[in-house]
Length: 112
Length: 112
DNA sequence: GATATATTTCGATGATCATTGAAACATGGA
DNA sequence: TCCATGTTTCAATGATCATCGAAATATATC
Image (cartoon, rainbow over all chains, first blue to last red; front, side):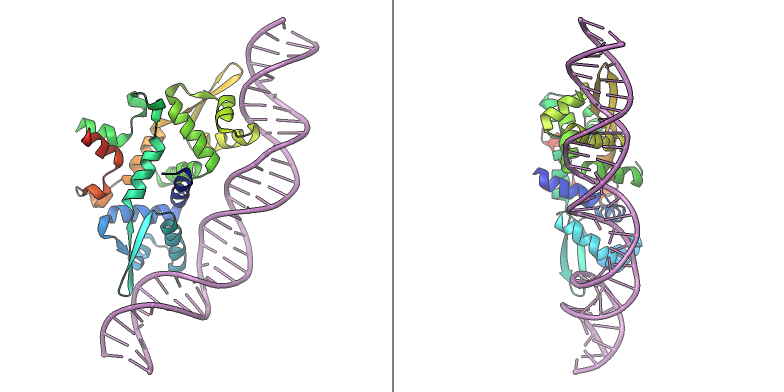
């Protein structure tokens, strides 16, 4: 992932409404949700929601597909994972690092 | 992690200079770097750098400690990990989810 | 105390972003 | 075709943010 894309992804998430929308979609999983349903769950008015969905989409954080009158939005897990990787990339100069800087998801995996 | 803190953390990272600074500190590891060294590595002028370091610090993404004339900054790995966890929290409604939505760091762990 | 080095604060400027009602657009069904 | 429903675009407004030189502050050394 390029720096530019990472900044775009982070900026997309760095806003109350958009973060709420994205997390809602993460929790909904791969089947996604219609725009109206997202608005219902988050309490964001239609025009605002549309604005924010466009931002998220432009940053590659969500995908959309038309389904009749509905537009189904889904979290883009690839971009999400690329972002997580980018943030921890070359952590501690690439040396095996102490528990301090080990990503939570990795330690969870180890302790299982 | 609370939504408010997550937005603050994301906003702190959602900016070219700050993302560069943070990644530099992540790569430097727990021993951190002096402000001047960060400026040297990133090419950010002192006053701008100070502004951005304050933002990162306020968001809990970095810590600082005085060391003589120097101020040593370190990435805050706890906040970082909390953020990563927050983003993937309750992924797919808590159901065991397909490879699609498994965080990269977890899959890396598994394939090792 | 005086001087050199390291970092932060101040302040003015230009730029970008969030919000939302009203209107427009798209689709499906009668 | 006509209507109901779902979603997006438009446009105006207010708010927040990034930049960086100059000056101020803090610390170490002589």
